[in-house]
Amino acid sequence: MAVKKYQTFSEFYPFYLSQHQNITCRRLHFIGSSLIILLIVYCINYALWQGLWFIPVIGYGFAWLGHMIFEKNKPATFTYPFYSLLGDWVMFKDILTRKIKF
Image (cartoon, rainbow, N blue to C red; front, side):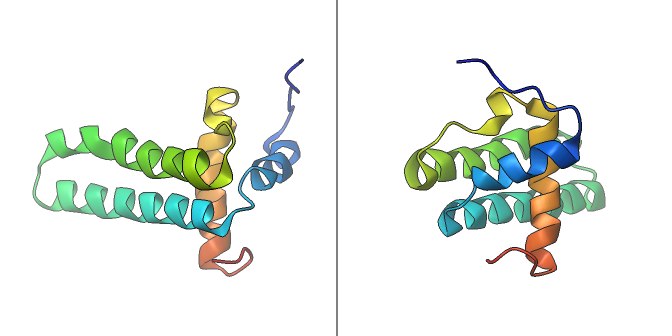
C-alpha cells in the first residue's frame, strides 16, 4: 500500500487527528507533552542538562503506549516524523484551548 505524501501540515493534521480518536490515547499524548514541558523547565532551572535526554523517552513513551493499547494503530511518527511531532504540539494546544475533547 502506497503511503500518502502530504505537501503541507494543514493537509496532514486531519489525518493525524483521525489516528487519535481514542480519548485515552489523546490523554496519554497530553500527559507526555506536559511532562516534557515540566522536565525542560526543571532541567533549565537546576542546570541538569543530562535530564534532557529523557525528552524522547517521555514523549514517545506515553504516545506509543496510547497507540499500542488504546488506539491500536501504528503511530504516525514512523511515517511522518516531522509532521507528527508538530501534530503532537498542535493537538496539545487544541486540547488546552478545548478545541479537542480531553
